[in-house]
Amino acid sequence: MTLWTIQPVYLYEQIMRDGFYRFDESRISKNAWFYCCQVAYNWLAGEMKKKIGDPPTGVKYPVWAWYKHYSEHKKPDLRRAEYGRKSEKMVCMEIDIPDEQVVLSDEELWHFVLNNSYLSRAENETDYNNDMRQFEALPESKKQAEKVRSWQTIFDIEPVDTEWFKKGRSVQATFWELKAEQIRKVQFFKAR
Image 1 (cartoon, rainbow, N blue to C red):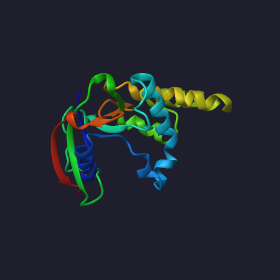
Image 2: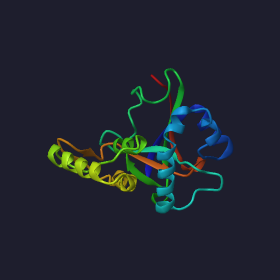
Image 3: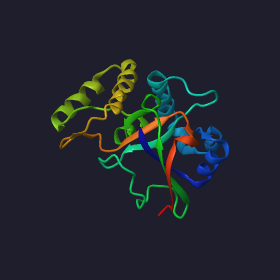
Image 4: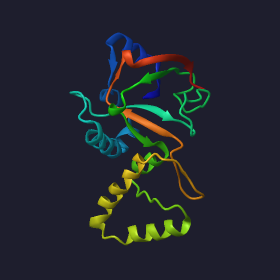
């Protein structure tokens, strides 16, 4: 499967030196944003284990890449400001990862998991309001389980584009490690 991962240049250099890259949890030890989202990352890691198997020893979280960006399966537009801090040296790597080692999910819907929110699949306002009323009427003891169950929607990446519900436009990929031999093309750039 062809994917694109956008990383700081030092990670590319590390891959070339060590032959692989795995998420380094020590790099985020002081990152407050990560810790507020740890429930989401732990949930995703658990789902990945179910879908593609256990990570290599010592690996807790995945490497991220793009499968589809703005409804197209092609390299992301690197002129966008969202890739790195301003003037940071970055690299976009086109990579080829075996399908059975990748979990695809909807990047926009992933934010419901990050925000620990219930994810309604309603495709119009009336259905959404009904769905939310039903969710809110649940006993507190059942809400968390229903909320977590609703997150499975992020793995359904078939495009839906209604007035109220959109999915499948931006699809992210997660996998346990990136090996140097999986890199096909490299483009260096500075974040804008």
